[in-house]
Image (tube, rainbow, N blue to C red; front, side, top):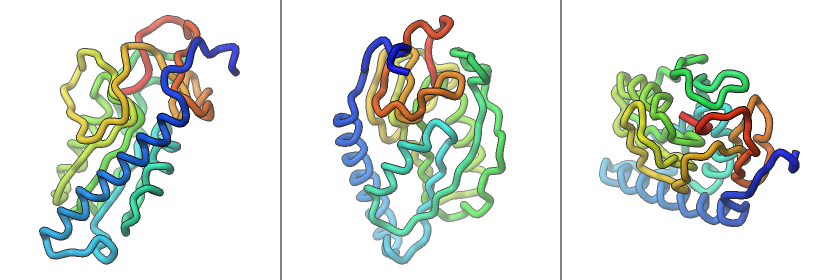
Length: 195
């Protein structure tokens, strides 16, 4: 596997430190919102995390462990990079969105903000249910012109327009288990992973 890696972009220690910071900041913001409504973070059950699979699996698992509060975790599947593609083909839901988001504080977690199509789709569908708030957290924000303008509330790292793998991000279903964010050696051309 290492033979396919051109170089490391973000090492595992930097990822771990940033995920800790993000988790604590998000938890603090949510606790503030709940407190303003007269709720307690440990009792409310009104925080819902929606992780976009499969890329956000590892990031979300580490992130929620840094959020010491009562929350629910839901998974949604959205396809945008089928097979060995390195270019987004548009976002399409592949699973059912949770239907109990009314009045909840929702955090959508994804691995990377690239074209904006995936996060725009999920956010619009969540907002249709009337949540108390919707926030977006991404591990990576690619510095590119987006197809759809979407703003993330929490960003782990800004990265250049390169195709990256590791820490959940894949190429053709592989490399998700690589512990760092790495640039893949010329995966058939294209501008990068994520939506």
